[in-house]
Length: 78
Image 1 (cartoon, rainbow, N blue to C red):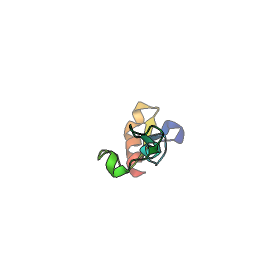
Image 2: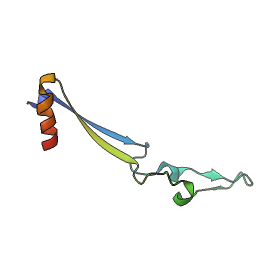
Image 3: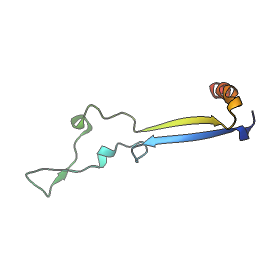
Image 4: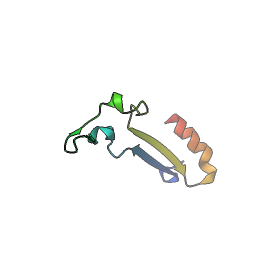
């Protein structure tokens, strides 16, 4: 297998803020005082907020269907 036989795709998935929590930048307003904003601590927002905000996936493709098996072996080795 030659380098030109494969395509390596680095896929970065996040909430548009890399490794930071997007909720940390949201300001909340009291219904009793429209001019006063505040932040809500993470523990008060939701138990569903993830600990990580970004994932990195590496996808490897081959241009030649006959090289799928060697590509899989190379991926496991890598």
